[in-house]
Image 1 (tube, rainbow, N blue to C red):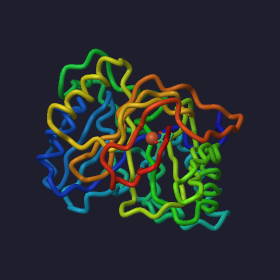
Image 2 (image 1 turned 135 degrees about the horizontal axis):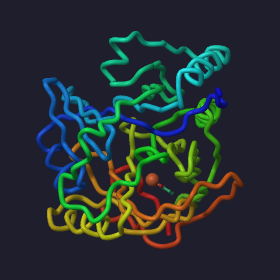
Image 3 (image 1 turned 180 degrees about the vertical axis):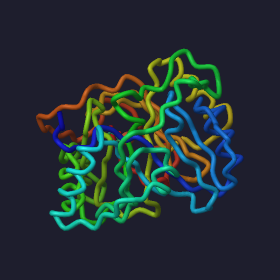
Length: 302
Ligand code: MBD
Ligand code: FE
């Protein structure tokens, strides 16, 4: 039976990096991801579970997000969603087999979101049960992925209403969840949108940003692994932009640290399920104090 055509998870992402070796080391020994080198000279892959990969790391040298890959259930939903996007006037390109093969999916279309972030919709990811996930450093648990996708991203938008309309059409729900008072008397508004049980898979505000991506949140099943990741940031003197804290919306214990590309990773644990009934907050439960400014999140969250 064909389901309502909607995105069901953040399936994969592509990033470009200037220092591939630094990224291999960071992703495996600090975060615990599995590095997968294949014959491609221009990219490598990061695994978080039994999918062939969750992150494609391109050597093309921009130190930014290259694309987000949103999964739909199957071909019927893919075709219906493509039609829906076209009917609404969005410019989409359904890809041929070669491009789908490059992403290791059965079907693929490409477009840009209203903020200009390259956006891909796919069905049928390659899942390598013949090569079970092997973490890059010992983990007590694993990355929490499954039907919640690989994590969440905060991305740049210039027209927040247009972005909300676009992601709503893809099947997301969500609205303003934070109104944070700023020292200058203004208020920063952040929107959070979900497409599954993860509190949010995409979030954005209206603030200017140097890069497409502000941060990627990845979640561990075990607090022990989050704690170790935090310690490894400290031991290796890596920048921590925001200290440990608990968000009011997803209730997750997280911190924000710098990746080798200068955007942030938000390792976390114990995210609460998404809510369909809107509410908003003026701050976090505790923590998330700014430790190192300049990473695009210099707000007083608590
Ligand atoms: C988040 O994941 C986040 O990154 C911010 C800034 C606020 C609430 C939840
Ligand atoms: Fe976040």
